[in-house]
Image 1 (cartoon, rainbow, N blue to C red):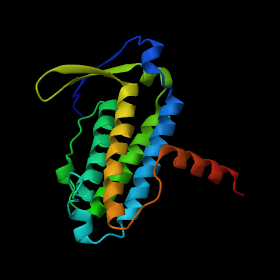
Image 2: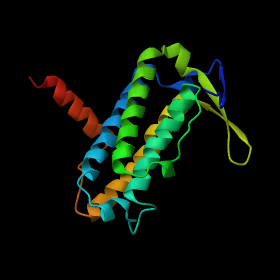
Image 3: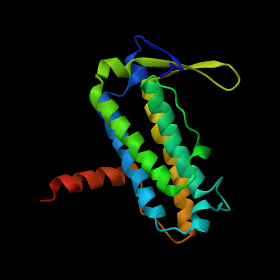
Image 4: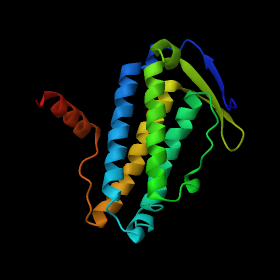
Length: 187
């Protein structure tokens, strides 16, 4: 695979990292839970509901869900120093999107289980934008980007689903935390 961004390990002051590998794993587990919950909710939609544009949201449910998956794939590819080869427009069906989501999740889980915290937490990515300017981002910032950007998009999808009277239920972090605790305490 081609290296598409320059990566360096540098000493980053603790005030900038603020996240250890276990916290990152927990945030990514939340991201997986919330996104998978949306996949389950949209399985019941008709074609027009799934591909149609909402009045108050940019894009369709499909385009926003595809964007969640592709952004996650983009950053995971950066973490693994691989070329992200996919765009949202490349995935046209819910079935293909869910299949690719499962692949991205498996790759992310393997990555997070295989890396050591010092190896990852202090990585800095130097990324050019579309205008040729280069920005530096820590690994922690990239994890937060995946989770927070996806949360924004999930919120747009939930708004669309609620207008269709197909509310998927709460997808916020505290609901995830409570569901995980409940699973651990049930016999």
